[in-house]
Image (cartoon, rainbow, N blue to C red; front, side, top):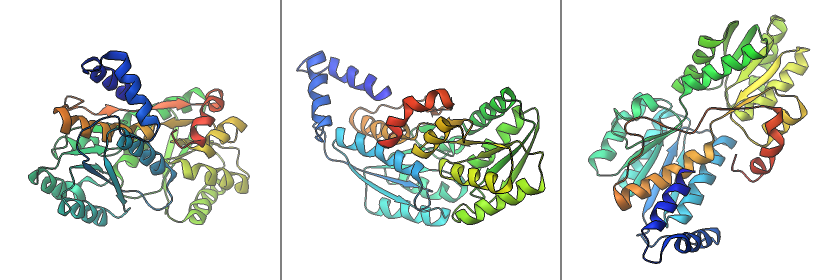
Length: 324
């Protein structure tokens, strides 16, 4: 929606005039061609993703689509270890990229390298996590959801569903956003919420840890995972444990949409990762092109949106193509 608004605004100032210019740009973008004639800048994105995380695939899809439209060369690097993520950012600074997009799951490890980017004159936009640190670190904007607010939405939804005891499964220790999600849920949830730390890179361990917890405590009636890839694993753990707990999750992908539709999952909290990637690239382009900045020092929010069974069918088409 933001990108569309920007496109309309630019079209209104175009020498070719209004609607016609916008239609021409849209046609070029849809055909895999740039919709602008600005220089071919290089933007790099560096995230804290591990291998095979479908959430970040969706973020990349959004970034790549915006890059095509904006005549941008887009490059991507990731590492779940904060120090190695920082080193990747430094490598792109050394390559003198024109813009950086960085996630701040572990802000303290990223502070110095973000300062180096700023000193080198490279604009930075942060995405997904670390909203509280973004402005202090000198980033132009932060794009994502407020993780505490998202957690509060989960607590409220659990209340609506009459849940009394919830298990919040954290799959990456030290990730500030994950802690905020669980703490936010605990803040609004009227029942008892417990945290369970698991090794997210080892799915068998994730399953066995959740299964053991459910077997040991039959009063748990809700399991909340913090990422879409972990929701099906939690469902398996529930089934093996013979538990009647409802499984809910943060984030959305094709498997989650299917689970919502067939009832194996209760609800999902979507932060629209496609928008995070798309708007990050688009906002960097706008900054380079026109010195535009969004947010006024506040995060540009892409969520949360609570999705239930009634929403699943409409979203399946989009999850299959990798945009939701």
